[in-house]
View (tube, rainbow, N blue to C red):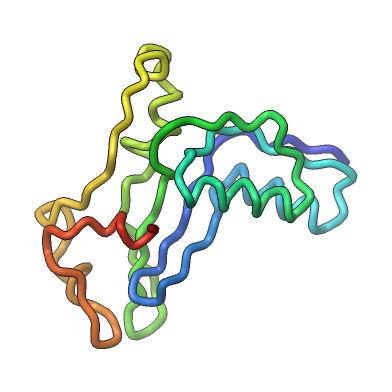
Length: 150
């Protein structure tokens, strides 16, 4: 079997556990197909030139996913911020690809302009509980949670 995953990539950042996992449907399918024995898998998408984007590219290579079709853009990687409740259920928030390098490349005029947008968490956008959970730690309202990735 030969497979080329085309599309999204995103990091899942588990807040308060300092864990960061690369993923996204297209990237996940390419990796999993390779793991179960596909003769060839590749990934075609846009990765950011930030540290998470570089890590993502290295992770795909480590999984023997062909990445020659990947484009690298100036900007931020897409990220879901995940909080676990006391039962282990996940609550997702994040930029969902908005204001990231993937979104910039989806608009030809923006891609040519060289605009670099950055995501900052607006404390009014998400419930207060996202900023108050964790094992003895909390993120103050208004602080950029994107700094968690750096």
